[in-house]
Length: 320
Ligand SMILES: NC(=O)c1ccc[n+]([C@@H]2O[C@H](COP(=O)([O-])OP(=O)(O)OC[C@H]3O[C@@H](n4cnc5c(N)ncnc54)[C@H](O)[C@@H]3O)[C@@H](O)[C@H]2O)c1
Ligand SMILES: O=P(O)(O)OC[C@H](O)CO
Image 1: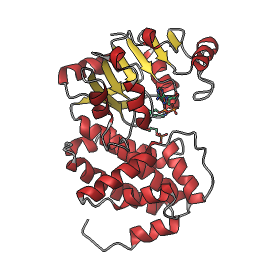
Image 2: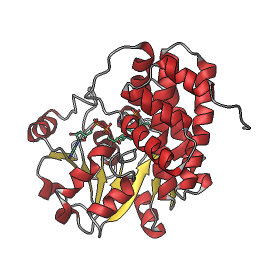
Image 3: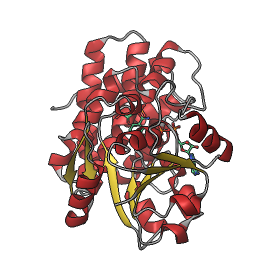
Image 4: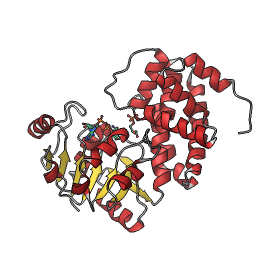
C-alpha cells in the first residue's frame, strides 16, 4: 500500500522517517515554504533538528499529489483535525485514514475516529496511538504502538503495512478505548508536571498517576470501551511515559504551571483542550473526574496550584 502523511510536524515527520525504511512516503506540509525547505535541506529543522529525512521521503505542499496514496496518516493536532479534513473531503473520499492525534474535540466532545466519520463519511478510519516520542521514532529507537481499527481485517492489513523495523504495532478493534487512553493520559501528565514543578514530590505523582488511571477507566467505561484496552500500550503504557518524562510537552506545560513560569504558547499541548472537554462531559454525565476537572481549572488559570491541592485533598474519604 502507498502511504502519505498529512501534517509535517514532529510526529508526522517521525512516522514518515520510520516508514521510509519500507518504501517511498509522501509527507504533506500545509506551508509551501516549509515543504520546499524540508525537501531541499532533508531536515525538519523546527521540529526534529539534526535528523536526516531519507531520500525516499517526498515533502510537498501539493495536496492533490500527496493524497494519491491509499493510506493517509493524519498527524495534526486533535483540535485542528476537523478543519484539516473538511477542506479536502472529496480528495480523501474512500481512503484509509489513520488518525495519529490524541485528544477529545472541545467543541463536540468526540474523538478522532468520529471526526473522520463525520467529515469524510466513506473513509475507512483507524487510529495509531501509544507511548512514543517523535524524536525516539525518528532516531530509530524501538517503539511499540497500538493500531486500532473497528474493521478487524483492515486493522490486520494496516498493522502489517505500518509496522517497521523499529516500530512494532499491536492491534485492537476497540477504537473507543484506544483513543480515550491517548487523550486522557495527556490530562494526567499536566497534573503530574504541575505536582513535580510545585515541589510536591514523587509520592504525589504516584498518587496522581494511579488515581488518574482510575478516572481514565471510569470515563472509558462510560463511553463503551473494553476495560482491557486501558491496560495496554494506548492507556497505561502512554500514561506512564507521559507522566514521567520531560520529553512530554504536556508534562512540561504542567511543570511550568507548578513552577509559575511562562510556557511557549505555540507548542502543541493536547491535554489542555481535552481537560476542558472531559470536565464538561463529566459534569453533564454526573461522572466523578476530580483530577481531570482540577487540571482543567489549573490549566485555564481558574485555579492556582494551592487551589488544586486543596480541591483534591479536601474531598470526602472513599474506598479505593
Ligand atoms: N510529537 C510527539 O512526540 C507525538 C507522539 C505521539 C503522538 N503525537 C500526536 O500527534 C499529533 C500532532 O502532534 P505533533 O507533535 O506532530 O505536533 P506539531 O505541533 O509538531 O505539528 C503539528 C502539525 O500540524 C499542522 N497543522 C496544524 N493545523 C493544521 C491544519 N488545519 N491543516 C493542516 N495541517 C495543520 C502544523 O502545520 C504542524 O505541521 C498530536 O495529537 C500529538 O498528541 C505526537
Ligand atoms: O509531548 P506530548 O506530551 O504530546 O506526548 C507525546 C506522546 O503522546 C507520548 O506518547
